[in-house]
Image (cartoon, rainbow, N blue to C red; front, top):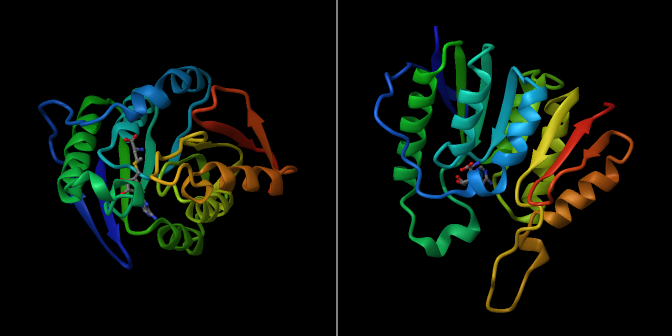
Length: 227
Ligand SMILES: C[S@@+](CC[C@H](N)C(=O)[O-])C[C@H]1O[C@@H](n2cnc3c(N)ncnc32)[C@H](O)[C@@H]1O
């Protein structure tokens, strides 16, 4: 049986799986352009059964993971998103309630397309709070894969990285999106509004605990090698 459970702060509810149907509703190609080519190679060899995604938006990366992994094995996928958008989205006039509705539609459709059970656990809230909750629920050292694609502000990314590391198993893979991304601001580029400084600080501090996996630099890939 496949269920989707939605937790918000301390409240949670379990919903029956919707039937899906129709077509995916995506309004951008962020996942296709940044990740898909490398993920195809990674998941040809590596088969994570328990996945954590920070930043899901319309579910493009989530749906890829469901369709790729749950053809052959049961998967548990946790998605954290505030569905409030990032600071970089404020001028885009995006209706985030519609984005969240597309996430629900898209993930239900992905689940309806695979043969193996999918447990999709949705944590709606700010990542630092949801990650701390997962740690306090003894989920440390339990995830095979963590994908960090939430806030792109350096202090937020650093907090996400440190807590993601605690949740990841030794041998698990940690992926950061938008390693070399920056905004075009009126005053130029702002390193505090980019993930790179935080990812670099994390990799430096965890030098003995992570091993960077060579790949194109739009995303940074690493394996946890020690607690
Ligand atoms: C770039 S999008 C994620 C894209 C998605 N992985 C995909 O493949 O399409 C970033 C998401 O992170 C969420 N977000 C931004 N800051 C956040 C925070 N501090 N906590 C939780 N979610 C956050 C936004 O609401 C947005 O949906």
